Length: 344
Image 1 (tube, helix red, strand yellow):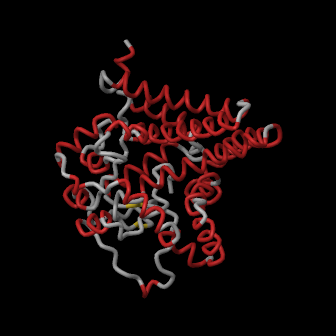
Image 2: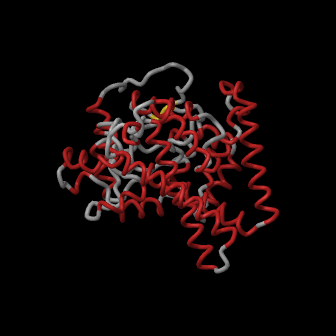
Image 3: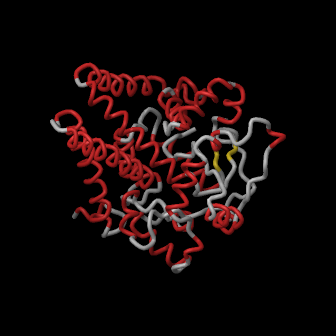
């Protein structure tokens, strides 16, 4: 029986629907940007393509937590496949999963790339990034994704992955080049769909934690808050798209119920609303409303790249309950470059 492969019996329907939708939206979107004859058809196809990639990305996250199938290797296979759809296949799925596990275990944003240091050392790149971000081009996160494309050539610890990395670059690059030559409008629409994916992922990530990042991914150092569940919950925040209309949160596989996810990382996406309700009942004060999230996303789009140019002028950022209250009032900037798809 198919249900025996899934971790929970109902997973056949919930996970099955999400997987089918991701594949269907991606395929329909690709077909549409290539062959749709009307402008409306092209626009709808671009949106379908983007959302197919979004769901694929959140399925990579589910696979990383082994919430879909009983066997770890089955989750890994699906995660690898979905990483090809959402453009995260240049590195390995195992690297993505390891970094994300460190995030949960250490209660920290554990990274290799120190982007604040990079921007301070490359002021022209910072200036260009700020201009692009002002015009809503997610240049900061695109820089992170560019490193992901060349991961084995940029990160010394990944040198043994170069042949695999080159193979993926050759396949994905070759397919995109063919599209660019034979269907340039479709290539442009694919880029737009990918930019929508990046915007959605970082919008959902932006306010979920007030963690600072630490470059300890390969050092073996552990956070002082490792395993502290109470501290973890105080510094984790929920950003559902809607509390009144829970079905809207399926657009991001309930990823906005982030306190629930951190309270039980082994729970599948479709159980997170119930866990959130058990944690907070219907207390609206424990979530950051969508309207405020959008306001913060707009107002802080340039400032959050690098919050200050001189470390000595740093203004302390509110933490914990103070951060939640400041965020609910729209008085924080949010963060960038925290995607679970980047493995560095």
